[in-house]
Length: 167
Image 1: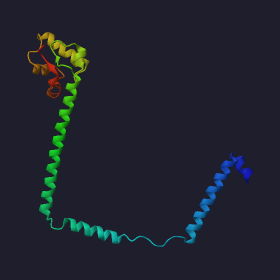
Image 2: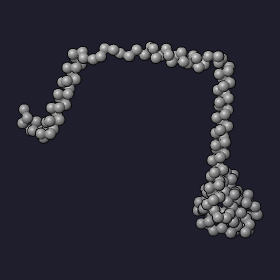
Image 3: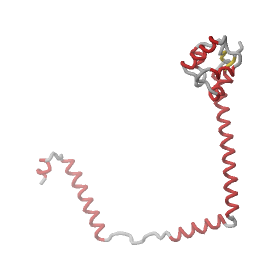
Image 4: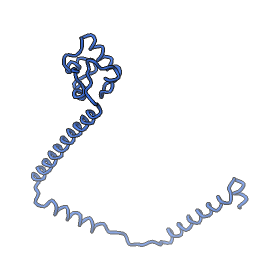
């Protein structure tokens, strides 16, 4: 019989592993068919009833309206915290950007590379800024930067503290 397995390319180690798996399978069949098992099964009804009692005790005295008011109060607190976290995050990002720059960039004198250091300003937008500056004899106010195609209110809000028109 071993020669038949070797005919299919089995090594001696393959034969040992196959025999072990076969024996484990047979042992499992014997256990399954003989009825060897603990007949005690766990009764979940006791733990379920304890859980239901605890729930009732926790919400006893809360009427539906009170519960809804409690939910609304928690929701408003969460919204307040979320808003404050968002504003803190924006402030932190702005402070990090300001720390990156030693001084503000003068948009009337800056080169393309300097303008590209600003958040959201790439080469094309920097070239447009320079082109606008040359056609209009510079920027009179930093808000005039929004007249450049590609710079909207949001982008301007991000960079307004990083730019200047004065020396």
